Image (cartoon, rainbow, N blue to C red; front, side, top):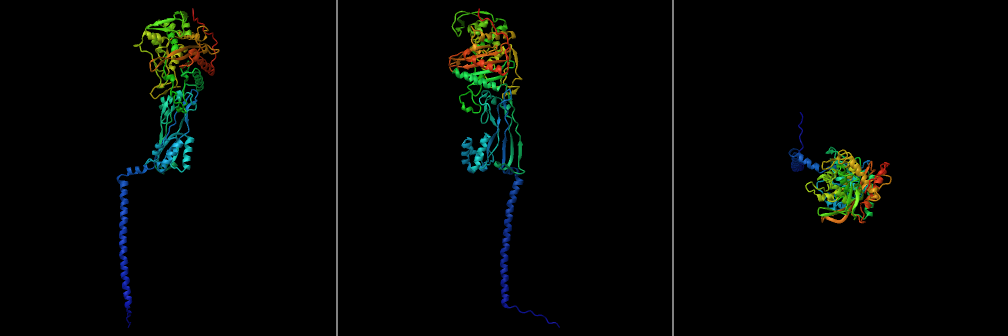
Length: 607
């Protein structure tokens, strides 16, 4: 029989220790559970906040928050269009585009050093300190223009120097710079660009044609200055459309020569200013149009007193005796006179309530009509013009283009002044016969004289080769030039031969210095009193001029020169006649025009 195993009794001390251990474990388990519960609650709260924000961002108004986030880094930069070139008749650039850069800033990087960077940029680039400071501190922007159209070397040097001095957040981008490679040559016509817009000349008048249309690029960037773009971020681009070239009829080299010649004449005669125009007789194309004084288109501010446009178009004046050839051409066309018509010219002639005189005192002179032109007699011209019927002279002058703009395309052109039919009267007509009481611009007068040279057919003068539309919407150029018969070919030829006697008649001719060796030349002097704009009266100063063409019997060029207020007291024959000769001689040689070899006019000038 198996004996039952009996336990040994546990000592009391051991029992007491066991109870203490159980009590201790119970106390530890209590705090752990509490901590776990608190932890779970905190995690739940954080997740709730995140969840609520997520619902707000993605569910309630996702687009606005996405836009706010994107705007912090979005860059929208202009992609400049390249402006069209302005070219002479041979394709030589009078205005073109050179390498230029725009200087840009990232305000997020420049803000902390904004005052110092603004001072730096003011010194290096000449920008306004206050304006630069505002841009460098612009809140919420990663992109600000500091300066546009900076020469590439200057912009690059400035940004590199800024980086070396510890200034971050500046960079450059392509921005073509307008360039005028010939300086002051044709600056009166070409004009120039200001900081934001064209300010004068063809640059202003044909801005829409030349400018093109800027494009732009929009992208997300982590650092615009470093060109770092966000992967898969915004990337929109609209390419620029470059402007159109503007081809002119001007001959750059001829323009330079005429400019130098006119400048010398104005300075030598101590005059106020001068103008000269060279026109292709057959086409009406303007080969040269010069004003003096002028300015350098690369630095217009260096000549603050110079006109920023063309005096030859905007400045009007009384033409003086060059007007006589128009008066006589109309008489010949009507068959009212002939070159040999005999006139007894007195020392004075009553017109209305005043007397008309010649520029020189004399008794009764026996002159033919050719002699009246050769000797430039005011009285003889008026006596011949008395044969006009009412309104006839005005109709002829209007047909010659007086009293109306030439249509070159420059909005600054003045139309001059030709009295209306309603205000026209006999006393004024007598003075208009010889170039008073009428005002013209130099291009108008050139085109009128050219009508005689072109066999009596007026051609609209042109400055634009082909055609182009200016900012006013007018299409102009050689393609749109119109031709109008004004006087008969016979009348024009007779007038041309009478004009030849101005130069080659040793007794009565007033401009022997206007001749060109080896060529037959026709021309007419002019000396007119100037009207003071303040008193509306003659102020004692004069405008002297000479207009003509060569060769007489097969004209190739028409040249007109006018000089205001010569201080040496000279007239059209002595001041502008020699300038005409120099310009005509150069043009004939440059274009290889041979003498015709025919005998010059020997029309009698007296009887």
